[in-house]
Figure 1 (cartoon, rainbow over the protein chains, first blue to last red):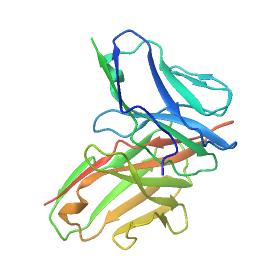
Figure 2 (figure 1 turned 180 degrees about the horizontal axis):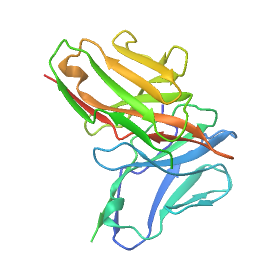
Figure 3 (figure 1 turned 180 degrees about the vertical axis):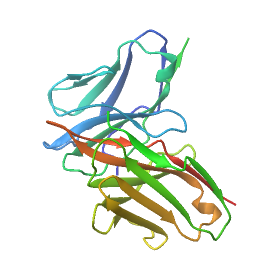
Length: 110
Length: 117
């Protein structure tokens, strides 16, 4: 079963920052927080992941709370192409499987 | 990021026939690959974990004799849906694990849409 809780849907205006929350209150010490997104009829796309420090790459930033019980994915300047279902997943490393929850459907509007 | 391909991208077959789907890691070697299935408006559900050179590990409720998985090389895993029926119609997606200097990540293929008539 998925170990995360996400809002089912969110809206964002084009050009604004999209902040997607995720609760993972039962996360273990060796589990990372992964974020993927799935655009309609495509395979999931890796976005970012982290353990306890905040992470940033060319796609997004990941902010993890100090107690690691929640995190926020930030898309700094959302575009229409960022409309997708975003999945927050917690998982240990070591080639373990990913368990997908229901994710957040982000709609970016003009 | 690493590239994973799938072939075919979509396939239509008659009920009772078998269909093979290929998953390839194009620019890296993958000892572990995963197969998922996704029904319309639903999330991805893991079917099995494919390990190079050994038998696949199937999730509970997934019939191993119906969904044959072969991982014969470090860049190729195949999923064969045997004696397909209309209820097997779905979006099948594979992923492969890759390790970089400090992190291990899974990358997904584009998916294969199967329609069984």
